[in-house]
Length: 290
Length: 248
Image 1 (cartoon, chains in turn yellow, red):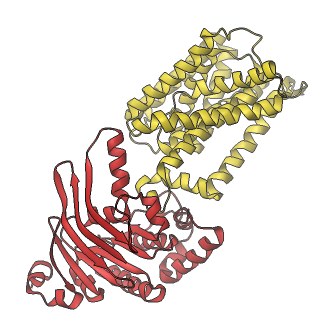
Image 2 (cartoon, chains in turn yellow, cyan; image 1 turned 45 degrees about the horizontal axis):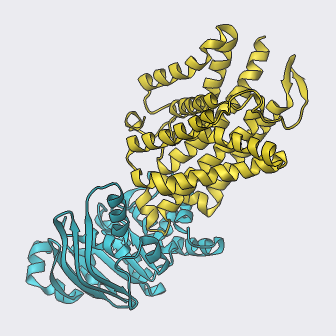
Image 3 (cartoon, one colour; image 1 turned 30 degrees about the vertical axis):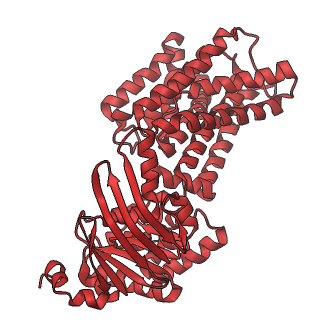
């Protein structure tokens, strides 16, 4: 049982990392806390589902289309709403959370509730690892996440847009003096964060069903991981997702499943009490941020 | 190359620049000398367009009202209301005061970020040139910019401005907080730079002594107003300047 718990804890950590990476990217670059993040996650899952079941687009293509669509919605949200409240943290949070509520509750209102709303797994197969059954989808999630992190790293450090991201993240006004348009880069960062939420949804949602409530859980998990790791710090987010991932799975196995969600919240509280900037955080004004 | 006509800049009701006019000809080094809060940085921000960006962002969130009156002509075209990115594309580069670099990035990465509008080959070429102008930076290539000394950061900051391939280089208080030794090194580097690459340089300073000998022409600014202008030599010989800035 112990080994099985460890295997699933690892997978759980990777899933948390996937869910948090987009939130972290947007915050790290433009300082925007995108509380519509969980809604984007669910939105993209539903768009994929609708494309497949209503129009009959092949699975792979509809996933790609829904990622592009979600990125577009993120860009629109920045261009028309966030741009006006940029830099005013509370307004950003209220605006994005409001947009998230609208998206999620609209789906609930339309009646998108039930087990028929689910996405197929990529490959239906399972392995035995250290005496534990692990299905192919979970293995793929791990592989996919590693590839994604590598690609993101290469993108940030070796493309001109990625370097502009680094510049804006550190000193916006100085970046402006080199011809980097801060509004454009901030829009890209929100859009990319949304796309990453959609990518996470594409690979993670096939494990369960698409449910509106999941949108809120994703947001809380992303927040937990980012706050514990230190907002805007990629290394911190990786460590934090391992911490939360293991804590959740072990609580699930040894204490009881209904305590799982409390773990993230308790972890947030503990970190805010002991080290408010997070494990690897550079954001000293974190208390003000969240 | 640059003509500033009757510039007035307001922050809400506070007048930061009052009817300021000046010209910069191609290939010159021009100095703007003034004490703290005389309006030097506001002038640089207005010329580089940063103030337009600040005004737009303040207006969006209903903050401070920033207004700019007057005209700025660059290479014969009016640029008074254009955004900073547009001015960078036209070849106006600003090295902001207090040597701002990207502290988390290495020296090389700082140069790459500054080369946002350049191709990979251009970045390589210009960064090699920057290392030639400032040889002290060469061994620090992979060090984080936040760990550099003030003088090294200032060199890096000017090196980063070079990545823009400027025709007009605006240096806002490049000597601020540097030792007299470092000031000398930097001044001679700026002179060499200007001679070799025929860049036009506009430099603001509160230290008149190291700057006056190298400038072709200079302006003295006080409380946002132009009080004196002349060639570098004329300013050096001016008794008021001597009293106010040299302490003679």
